[in-house]
Length: 489
Image 1 (cartoon, rainbow, N blue to C red):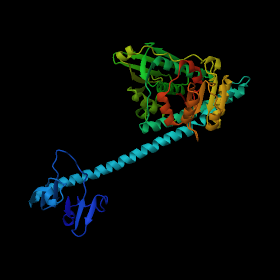
Image 2 (cartoon, rainbow, N blue to C red):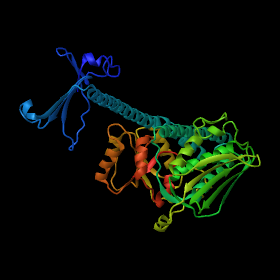
Image 3 (cartoon, one colour):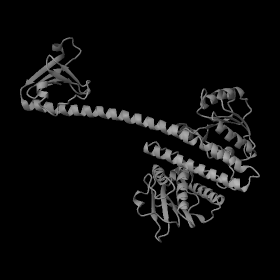
Image 4 (cartoon, rainbow, N blue to C red):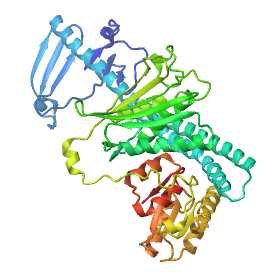
């Protein structure tokens, strides 16, 4: 569209000082005309037309064939009109098109900025996960090694328990911050599988009972009840463990004495499973109830107020709901959530759902297991972080595994013995030769050996988690790595 500057200047709607971009405007000083380019709209059903208009007259030319050599050959009928109303109607149409074009360009720019922001945020999560998780594992691992040694005096045992307890708090804080960041960036993923929800809840209860015993704080009775012993759901077992553990931990924190009960019930009418955690503690402050599940909503001097926010988002990601209320008798509170039951078709399709290991190994609280309990004996360990290497090596050797450990992947490759090792334990992110490349090279020498990748990087952890699996024969050794990020491949 061509518009004379004289007429352009009379319209405040069309004048932009300065013009939005040089790409959209070009001035021809000899004719005192501005040319505005509008995003081309293409359609096979539309006849192309040349339109020249100002606010007084319009000139419409039918374009027949733009491949012709001359303008006269390319055009067909032409219509000139000095009707001001006709000219103004064309101007109005083009004003709308101009505004749409500008909005389209701005939306594209904003979209590019958002994509760049998401990329930066993803990189931050990955790096932060690594840098925050990395120091925690040696603290926990080596403290467990010292705690498991025979002949340790009671005073040292108390001190080590303090270190372990606070290292776990730091680990939980780290994971909460990372989870909150993932929720904000809409990158929180759930890995769904079929399992018995009863097992998850019993597992969490057993953990908390043992922790209370270790801390010699038997002031609270933990109880469990269910109207069905075989409630199967399709969900992320790790995330639901996180949710139940958070609700139970909160109940313990705000209950000085009395009972905390976890009830699991199946509702066939609404096709839901309902999990409730009821305590006899101080209850929920009425002031905080409206914002209870928001970020940083807490009146406690302990905690960040992220746990309930994260838990609610996890449950909603499974298609469920979470809520809380003070108990009718005025003593304590109840936190509840729902999950959808699996359909009858799904139930028929499932042959068996394995029972998760709950009590086995819990009487012996050490995370280190005798190598006689697993078929794996010889382990080839490669990690460029010395602190992690020494932590894994000491723990595994304490459990009577034979371990060859290296901090350099190139040296490790040169020392590898084919048909000798039962398991490769390899860090993902290493200089020179990374974990994946090292494994590919080792497979050329020995393609039968099993590999477990170790990573604290969030991106690698999610990717490995989606493809990993652990055999029943290896479950004892896998328990050794329960507090780090290790995935079978």
